[in-house]
Structures are given as C-alpha cells and as structure tokens.
Length: 288
Image 1 (tube, one colour):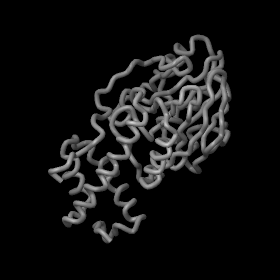
Image 2 (spheres, rainbow, N blue to C red; image 1 turned 135 degrees about the horizontal axis):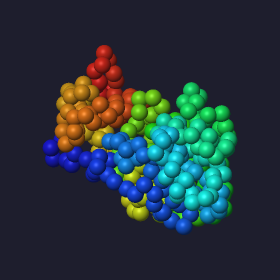
Image 3 (cartoon, one colour; image 1 turned 60 degrees about the vertical axis):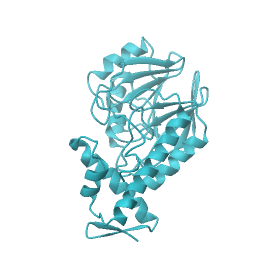
Image 4 (cartoon, rainbow, N blue to C red; image 1 turned 120 degrees about the horizontal axis):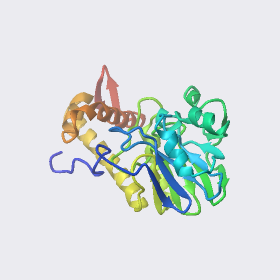
C-alpha cells in the first residue's frame, strides 16, 4: 500500500471553528448546537430555513441549554412553524423536547425509525422519499439516503439547487458508517444518487458549506473506493484482523480515533461480505 495515497478526503473535525450564528443565503441561516467534539466539529448545524416570520428549523442538535438563547437571537422575534429532521441520531433530534417546550407542540417531520425516534417526542409527522415541504421562500424535497442511518433523509432546496446533506456528506473529513443502522453498500448508492442530482452547494450537518458540491461527492466516492482497495489488498496479504488493518491503514490518525476507524473498516468488510467477496470466520476475515 506504500505506493498509493493513504487517503483522498483530507482534514477532520478536530479544531474546526465556525460562528455560532451565520447566514449562508437569503433563505438559510445556521445556528450551532453548542455540542463541539471530534465527531461533531464545532457542533451540529441547525438550519433556519425560509423567508417568513415563521420559518422551519432543520435538525435540532441535542438540546443543550446554551443552544436555545442563540436560536432565539438568530430568530430575532420570529417563531418556528415546524421541525424537519435528517435522522434519529441524538445530536440531530435531541433538541426536539426543548424546542416544543419553548415554541409549543411543533410538527416534527422525519422518516420513522422504530425504536430510535423516542427522543423526538410525540409529534412526529412521517415523511419519506419524494415528499415536499414548503415554507415561504423555500421548497424542500426529501431524498432517502440510507447508509449512515437507515432513516436518513437529505433535502433538496429547490430554489438554490442546494442539498442539506445531514451526516451523508460533511464539511470536513468523512462520516462514520455505524454498526447499528449503517450500511456501506447503501451509503455508496446514496452518494451516487446525490451526485446525479447535480447540486450547486451542500449544506452539511457538521462543518462549513461546500461550494464544490459535485467535486466533494466524487471525492467521497473515490475515498471509499480507495479504502476498499486497501482492505482487499490487506486480505490478499493475509491480514485478517480488523485491529491490525486499522493500525496499518490509519497510521496518520490519532489513536483515540482508531475505534471509529475500526467501525469504518468493518463496514467495508460487511459490504464485501454482502457482495460475496469476503467471509468472516471466528473474528477473522478472508477473501471468498
């Protein structure tokens, strides 16, 4: 593997800073969820979308006390009409009870995920691929994009040819394919679907806006393809243990991130297994 690049997507969320409140277009304003970390970056981006006095909010972060005053400051006297969610991970839906307590029983729109939606409360209005949500100045079309989470929806903002990508494409680094609800084969299909929409800009759930939208999606696809090639190469060389694969493939990554890297390696191996290209036997992987 020494004659090939170790990675295609450069950078990560560590040390990334962004304004707490920022306007990204005439109809899109972001408020950070005040939950910074190595996987969330400066925090979860929540989005005020629309041009009226009753815009919608896309994602809610996780309900930390410091978030609500910032959201109210950004709203500047406006009130929310509804909540729209990308997926059920806690840093995206955890703020729903906080916001419903402040603004009343807001409609909460998301694709249902049994057993994972409890943190959103009791006001979920189910939506799915192709559904359209309208607010003054903005039209959102839901796009089912599983892979990071089985319920994941991205949203095409028709007026801008922009896509709110949730955790499918991030503003820095790459996303994790979790053990629960994640699937790399589905994820690659989701990336290719987003690429086919030819977006002009991506609004991710973590990190800054991405102006070279198609270029970043292609980069994500190429990055995953490279990782798969690296894993196949290691299997061909007789390396069968995930921990050893991580140490060889992620030598440039801090050790505390290796468990997350192991999750990604296992997601690639499960994809190979689904394609009948790899086999697991007593915690040891081999090519089929």
